Image 1 (cartoon, rainbow, N blue to C red):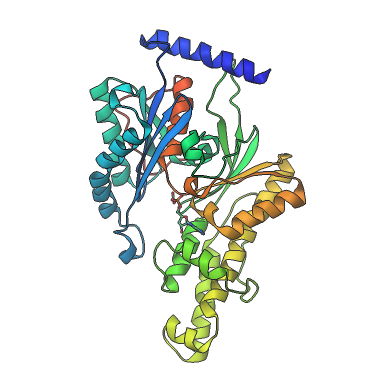
Image 2: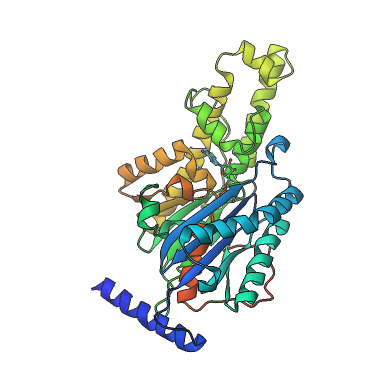
Length: 387
Ligand code: KG4
């Protein structure tokens, strides 16, 4: 019955939009999504709600610097954006003339990087005389759970389970650690884009940043999260008891953990009379593996404890995870484990939708298109913003 009502509302909305914009009602809704907030240039195409392509060009240029260099990121976006968009359109089997709207990440992120995607979206939309749709990057990550891959893409990826409302989403990336309450918008007219509210967030560093900085101290390449994950599989998670924060409410803190990790290493270097981590590793068997396993276990414990408290207090038992750090194997296992222990229905995205991608931006764009939520052509990107 609900499906029938949803479909009816969809047709009515499409009819309304088409009348307003003088478009052909029978025409497909084709959304191009563009993501350029950090160091991934990505474009995706959604046709009538179905993801047809999702192309990502990751920038390798930052590896040797141990972190993203903003100026290099913008230059790489400039080089990548045209071929990435072109490939996304071709893979989706659509021409640019068939596009209904261009959705782009307006922020938060690196200003120079965002400027490339925003300017490209505006230029293309102006040339094609179609609307642009701004997407908040953080909301985009949550929307990854609503992507509906085409049959062809489904064959290459895991299934994406769509959560019902309300649900909690733990958003963990290189720049954010937040608990978001997601619910349907309270409005007389059906709204497709849900309402999101941050109920807890980091007061200093993000979980991904803690992984990346600690990995750098160990001499691991950037981004360090996947390396920590890999080494942790060979280590003892209880070997090094790092400090855990004691923060009120549902907020997080990871700067103390970073310091605790650094001091543990500093004290060991001193005790063994060596100056480098590699020299220490020759004396202490399994050093890096045990440090990584202990760090990872501490991060996961910090994240899950607050999430558990929020789910209990708010009486919500649908819990999702999103963002780059949701690729972490221990965090994914913890979700499954908590799900079993506390009766949660858990939503874990396929790996390809954890890190930055344009499919999630196109999905948010598709919902906003159905809601008639367009933005002015003079919209400028923003480096910092909340949901
Ligand atoms: O969402 P994302 O691609 O970019 C933004 O920050 O917006 O997240 C990148 C973060 C990096 O900090 C990276 O180290 C972390 O995600 N990451 C991981 C893993 N894969 C990526 N952290 C832990 N374990 C992983 N397997």
